[in-house]
Length: 249
Image (cartoon, rainbow, N blue to C red; front, side, top):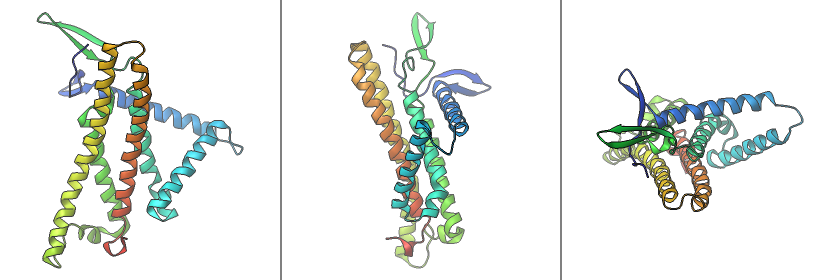
């Protein structure tokens, strides 16, 4: 069994920037999504086929879910691209990470009579840099949506409110909660995916043929759930950020 590293392994360096195996898989995920989008758009027809029918059914289901959270059809259409992109990107990244060969195909080097194995491919969400960057991007974008929806001053008043000592303290707590959201987003996704990766490696080492199969199906389910939870939390935070305090229920 090869060594398990918490950080992603660099494959090569571009200047001083390490090109890691998790970054390679994230680029592959982007290419897969782009190719899939192009294929679906080319196959669009007034009378939908099987593929288009499934896509339209998923779209309608997601719209209904967003309507139930946002309570506004127009807002659902406005924020659907962002929420759907997060969901699809994390889902594809997670599922690419459990394909055969990911984590098992790589480079072997002999360093001081010690054999070192570097996987060529690794699940992006098993790298804390990936999940933290995604979390920061999501929280920052949610705040930008809030500014666009209610105005910069009203949005800032959620964090800086000098009308009373209590409101000022609540504003500080709101600011701290934004930082906590980033940490929660990042570590929830990272912890679940990294733990699943370690589990598959250990099971494959102990019983390499039959035993890993049920765990692969479990990881398919976990990959979907983690993408769904991340996207739904982003949606809930958008719903909170795009209304004024007096409008919240």
